[in-house]
Image (cartoon, rainbow, N blue to C red; front, side, top):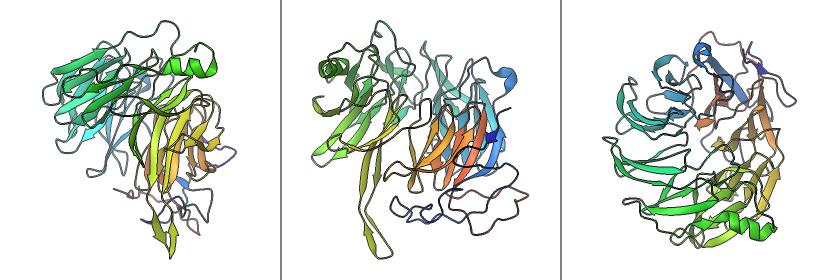
Length: 428
């Protein structure tokens, strides 16, 4: 059975918990919760053995990302046992479980307006279910695994599958609006694929043949000539890339001169493209193994009479070269951190810090200022999926099928007696 174990940085004992102080609303990178008490910042609220061992069929990882319903105080997460689980966020009590025909390694999307969930499964289907009961509303078969987070806009849900296909479906009925399939690249490919992104009426996506594309979100018509990022990498390095994949979900970032859509190529690096026509605005070809890109922004604020500057970073997670922070304006490197063995997840902002998982290690909290380590929990089986966070609370699915509920808070000045009942979560 997986367990939370000690590591070089922190030992989080299951036999007791440290008390914690509340998170200030003005917590930020320059005055985070851990500023005066480094370590013991990630505190375990509860651990729930979630995945049913009898239903697991050999998938060694849990790559799904939890989804938080803050208003309803619920968390939704898929598992390699083929189920999507709905849990009470404060206590971890099971609410319902929806069974599919294969692994659920997706990032669900919760729509609070309709109180429904959209999610995919490795059985090749995309589902819409009632969030209160798990009752099926519709199911759309796509013939390939669906794992990336969908997007809901204007009554249309957009998602991608592992066969280089982007799908637009009617959110009410599940009927297809349009699809686009691109022939996968010949040769070796990296596990993983892009999801869609929407901006100003266009849908963006990367493909395994090394191209980035844009489509009309309503009709599905191509709006760019395919941008061959693999060719750009070949021109810079002089070598034919072994892996062509553009597996990152595009990230829309604001710039002083407008905006850009950012793609990550596994061997080619990171590229910022002009959103309307796809011309390259800047590139950083020194980053290898790109698996995720995400935009981080902290507005300027004042704390105790001291003005703190705004902070903007493009965070790049990789499987080979650690975690990078780039200047969104030109792609220059702000900082880079070598990380534990194995790939790392997309970093998630929480309480003025960055939370991320390492596939062979566990869960870590980093500083946005320089990427330095704040705290960590070593998990015997590691954690491959992206964590989820709201307020000071976070949820992590371990590779062993356990859901960890964490509080991100500076420790109190005294150790409290472990509570006999679960404490309410902050941030809900």
